[in-house]
Each structure stands twice: as structure tokens, then as C-alpha cells.
Image 1 (cartoon, rainbow, N blue to C red):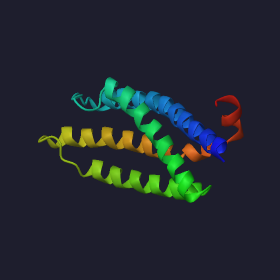
Image 2: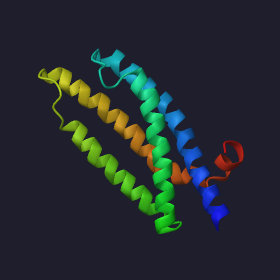
Image 3: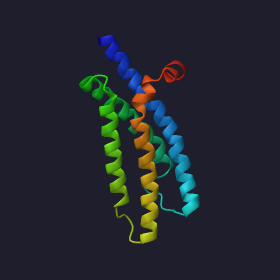
Length: 142
């Protein structure tokens, strides 16, 4: 039982790390494309450094949280997926209703940038159990 638990923990962490690396590339691409398209300039919070380190760390933590859900709820991945999607919708709603800048146009651009990153991370985090259970992922990536 301990070996299975240890293996599940390491697989969940490695899957989270892999998804984090892929999400980092997606978020960087979204960040560059969004800034080019809208002309949004402020980069105090969302910048290259915060995306590279924050996204990887966040998805690694999501892998650990998945392991906790796995231990508590057994193999019922649907509970994890529902909780992550509900959290994503809540954070997306909060990102859309936030007020960071006095200028309305800049504030809308901030909400769009943050909302897109939240959506990318939320969908990817919810897909973690699907990747972990995939034979292709297990054979070629893990």
C-alpha cells in the first residue's frame, strides 16, 4: 500500500510539473499575443518572470492537491475536476469584476489578460487526472 501511495504521489507531482511547463508556454504565448493585440503595457504583476515561476509552482501544487483528493475520495476523479472547475469559474468571475486601474480601458485590458490566464490554468488543472490516467501519457511522458 505504501509503495502504491508513493508512486501515485510522484506521478501526480510529475504530471502537475509537466502540465505546468506546457501551461507556462501557453500563458507566455497568450501574454505576448494579448499585449500585441490590445497594446496593454503595465507588467507589474503579470510578466515573464511571474509566469515562468508562478505557473510551474502552481501546477506542481495542484498535483499535490490531486494526490490529497485521491487519498480522501479514492479514485473518484470527478470530485477533483468539479472542485477545480468551480474554483476556476469563481476566480474568473473575480478577475472580471476586479478594479485595478482608474482608467476603464486599461482596467478592461487587465481583466482580459488575467481572465485568460485563469482560464488556461483552470482547464489544465482540471485535466490533470485525465492526463495521469492516460496510457499514452504514462508510456511516453512519465
